[in-house]
Image (cartoon, rainbow, N blue to C red; front, side):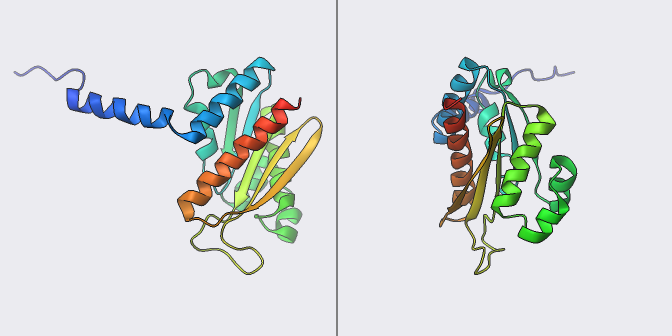
Length: 185
């Protein structure tokens, strides 16, 4: 009887090493490293509420060893019901302004902060594309929110890339806004 193979082949190991080095060169991860250092130095905890980024921001934060020292968790609330049920976004706000709005981004950030009892929380809601846009709300429209004990702030962006680029730009904007807020605490 043949013994089971243990470990992995050198080809698979080489492939794994290559993919790890690609992650380390990612500008999103570089921003996440800066955020982590800033949060840990200031004893700040972070939570997220993501829609169009689908967990991309959380993935960047948790790609860094030691992220559990400041990152509490996140909610991917792609559907309106998830925004309402998991983040306590008022259904009247969703009905009046739509999921892609400054008002909903603010409510998502506030909801994530409350749910996780975080020092600060960020939110992302937008239309990544290629479909779903309108004259009033074009593809690429994104709102990024941040909330802490000082209040909430929302920024509006209109990206012009494809779906992947729009999601990446939105994730970068969220981490940059978190860095800005945490640095000013």
